[in-house]
Structures are given as C-alpha cells and as structure tokens.
Length: 226
Ligand code: SAH
Image (cartoon, protein in one colour):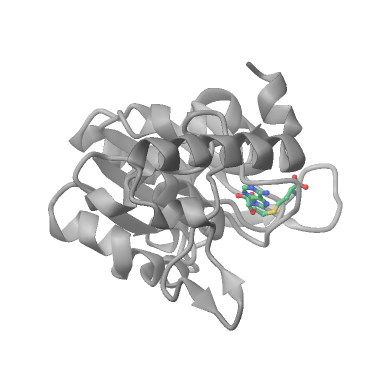
C-alpha cells in the first residue's frame, strides 16, 4: 500500500511515521507513506496556497490550483483508489472504514488548514471525506496520521502475531476484554483466577463474557447495531 499525504506542514507528520509499527511497515516494504509539501505547488513568488473567502468573513481558504496540481502529478504516476479529505463534517471514521481502506493499494489524503479547502475540490475531486471525531483540529495532519495508522496496522504482516489486530476492540463489533501481566498478585490486587488456570477453553469463554459485559456497559450502541 502507498499513502500520499498533501500538507502545508509535513514536519508535523514526519514523527508518527518514523517510529514503531508505522516504521516497521515501511521497513518491511508493506506500506509507504509519502509527504508532499503543498507550498512546493504554491502560486506566484510567494508560493501562495490560500486566499480570502468570497463573501467575506474571517479565515483563509485553501485554493484549488496548488492542491489539484499536486494531485494531478500523483495521478500521472499511478492510479489512486480514493482521494480522501479530512474534515470535521465528513463521515466519522471507524474500524469498518479502516478495514475497507486497508485492502486498497494507493490513497491520497488531503490535510486542510485555516477554514478548509475550496468546496469545488470537495465537489469534483475528493472521493471520501472523514472526520476523526466531533471536535475541530487546527489542521488535517493529526487526522491523516490517525487514519493512516488505523489502516496500515491492519495490513497482513505489519503486526506481529502477539499484537494481532483481530482481537482488538471493534473488529468483531465488541470491545476488547481486560488484559493483565505479571505479577499475578500486586500487593493484594489479584489477576482473575481463570487466566492462571491454563484451561484455554475456559479462558476464551471468560474473555468473551468480559467483552460482552464491557460492551454492554460502555458502548451499548455497538450491540444495537447487530
Ligand atoms: N471551518 C471548518 C474547520 C476547519 S479546521 C469547519 O468548521 O468545519 C482546519 C482543517 O483541519 C480542516 O480543513 C480539516 O482538514 C482538519 N480537521 C479539523 N477537525 C477535524 C476533524 N475532526 N476530523 C478530521 N479533520 C479535521
């Protein structure tokens, strides 16, 4: 998989992709993330990427041309499955979207800034719009990092067996059960007995019960979706 991220602040994204699981995905050649500095596609000698909004009002709007020039250059090199815009008014990004996108080959993610991008790009060029939650960020970079991380960790070979994505929350419509590690007794705080029993059938049964209980308590909406 390849993800191309268009941003005015590539330095904000360099960190998340140079450590841990995302770095491993890159080192193994499973997923590449390329950052494109929109200023390199800016207009005139000021490398302008934004302008005042028509109709007046506070806040700049990102112009069509620099973003479109960057997208067209990328499209001339390969075919893209989706052109994603991160936006608070987009569909709320969830595990289902991550699963779906992890099967794709090439994605572009556009990070907005200021008041966002010119609506015509959204109408004519963007194919998917995702929000990472009901709050407003100052730019799309952190949203792009969240979306990329959620997608890339699902690609086979990225995670080790012991961190398998299949047992994570939401994969089966349930929250994950509680987890414990050594010591089995920390000053009287005890690990549930069943986990020390070595009886794997019983352990599985306990985990499923805990998943259901936790989901019913914390996210009953997930059970309603069935
Ligand atoms: N004026 C816009 C907000 C712009 S915030 C509005 O009220 O809807 C600037 C940029 O940050 C957006 O263009 C978007 O790319 C990003 N952003 C902000 N909040 C986000 C969220 N919850 N999810 C995804 N991207 C977000």
